[in-house]
Amino acid sequence: MTAMDAFQDHYPDNVAHCYGCGRLNPHGHQIKTIWDGDETVTVYQPEPFHTSVPGFAYGGLIASLIDCHSTGTAAAAMYRQEGRDMDSLPAFRFVTASLHVDFLKPTPIDAPVEIRGRVQEIKGRKVVVRTEVRSGGVLTARGEVVAVQMPENFGA
Ligand SMILES: CCCCC/C=C\C/C=C\C/C=C\C/C=C\CCCC(=O)SCCNC(=O)CCNC(=O)[C@H](O)C(C)(C)COP(=O)(O)OP(=O)(O)OC[C@H]1O[C@@H](n2cnc3c(N)ncnc32)[C@H](O)[C@@H]1OP(=O)(O)O
Image 1 (tube, rainbow, N blue to C red):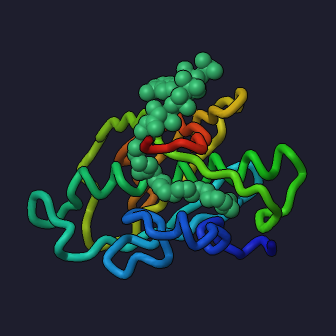
Image 2 (cartoon, rainbow, N blue to C red):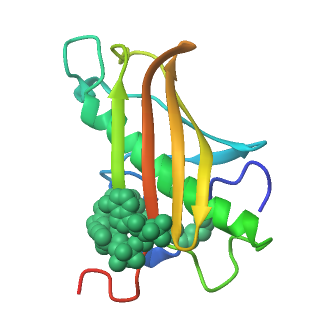
């Protein structure tokens, strides 16, 4: 993996259909997340149809971006901790156990949104990620996600 490869480009096909981050979902956000030192970064341009109040982005979009930014960060952090290449097997697959969002200011819809994440805790199968969302350098939302490695019997 080079510094510019997005985490989501390495998701195996069977977990690449997520609405927020799956590169194989043509209707989804297809976010792309990379390392920047110890932080992770996603930049996303909202579309006009993501409107809440005219001129501003829907909070569900912001939550979705925080969610998938954080599950991707969790997987990447686990690979980094184990000194493993992201394409090596077995793959780490994380799902969201908990998603908390504080909306601090309205997020403009006509400018790119930058999400930055930091790993707060890695313990067993759990990774806690804290995020900040900015538009034009202004902090508009904060998030905290508990991501848990997907069990083999997920959904059973
Ligand atoms: C960079 C990567 C490159 C390679 C990529 C490789 C692979 C791909 C990687 C990722 C891509 C994978 C999927 C992408 C798709 C979607 C991602 C987007 C996110 C979503 O859209 S995904 C859908 C919504 N999501 C669900 O549909 C989950 C439903 N749910 C469950 O399936 C279970 O609920 C589960 C599995 C979450 C936990 O179940 P479990 O039995 O495994 O958990 P368990 O009890 O063992 O807990 C273990 C530790 O998590 C803590 N914990 C558990 N639950 C908690 C909670 N709610 N709040 C706070 N902490 C919690 C415990 O407290 C304990 O922590 P502690 O050890 O510290 O006590």
